[in-house]
Length: 145
Image (tube, rainbow, N blue to C red):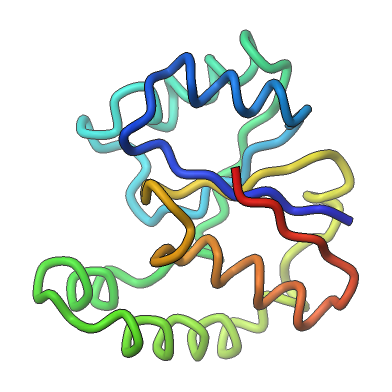
């Protein structure tokens, strides 16, 4: 099974949806805590759902189980906390939530991508989610778009 990851920041709509279409994505799993911000432009929840359906023939799923808490996000972004501390806290949260048990693997039966805002996966929780699931489920290949 493959799980793709992507972010929308610093991408045009053409680049973003073009990469999804080229990868054959049929489901986008939004792992953002806040998915309705005006700053998200074309990636706001309702617009994104429409564009995915029209451009990629893909469906949209928001999965807050895979999002950080607001406290964690604020500690990292607003208080300029360390990535290492954020990573430790977020992985502990995934374990506490038992996402490997509660997340429906059927979400990934079609080509699916985890979405967050960060430009690259290096310092983004979408990478942590994908790696956590790979470590727990064992049969995942991760592809960062």
